[in-house]
Image (tube, rainbow, N blue to C red; front, side, top):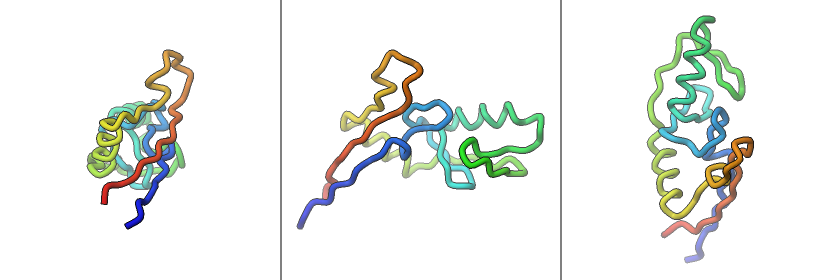
Length: 109
């Protein structure tokens, strides 16, 4: 059986709020994923307006959505980190650098 190679792109595993690899990832109703802490902080700042939106696509949610951990995404990030995967922004001492990595791996069949 031939091995399948999968290319992992940066936008799949980085939070667009903190620009780091996702920590405790949650997926909001529009489908975008964020670190739990990042999206809660973002929405807590927007609380005064009574509307909560996605930082990426700006879709508005009312009432505020309940957040649940995206376990599949969280487990995948953990497995990739155990194989030595790390975002360049976490390796760099420059805070202005963004999450940027590409990793190719072959799944075990």
